[in-house]
Every structure is written in C-alpha cells, then in structure tokens.
Length: 113
Image 1 (cartoon, rainbow, N blue to C red):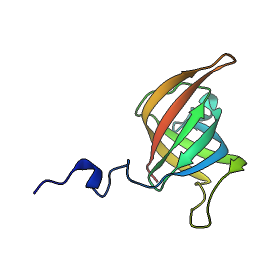
Image 2: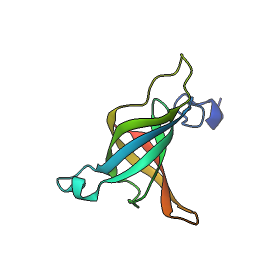
Image 3: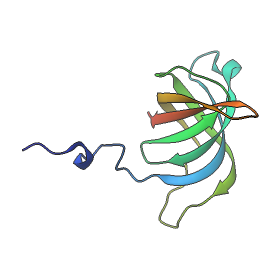
C-alpha cells in the first residue's frame, strides 16, 4: 500500500515550523566565505531547516554558515525550541523579493549539522 506524500515521516511540509524574527549573518562555507557574508532575517525554523530573507543572492545548493546575531522579535510558545545559534545549511530554493526600497532574496534552507 502506498502512502500519500503528506503522510511520509520526513516530508518537510508536515514538520512543525516556529515563527520568529531573528537577525542572522550568513556566508558560504568556503575558505573565502566571509568575503561574501550578508545579513538577513530568519522568519521561521524547524528541526530540519529554516526560511530567511537576505540581501545577497546565493546559488541553490550552496552550503551556508548561518549565525544568529540577535532577536528582533520572537513569538515562541514554551513548547518551541529556540532557533540554532549557528549551523550549516544547504540552500534548497531561492526567490527574489522586490519591494520599493531594496531587493531581497527568500531562501529555503535544510540543515546539514
């Protein structure tokens, strides 16, 4: 018997996401990665990944070091964990977000460590 995709244990769409608004710095995991660092804001996270918006465009598949640098606003319940302070994550998808003041990029990350 085949199970529906939404019933699969590792389906990222059914893993609980916790809303937040956390300032982050992210840079590619390379020897020259700090030269490409950018700031951003993490808007939600789960045990397997997170969504953030950053000023700089990276390629899908890039491994990023993501470090939280401060909470702007956090709306967590007592049952929720805090977002990771630092971690490695792979960019699974990226989309450009245009507004009147600046260009940003929405980034879907999957944690590696």
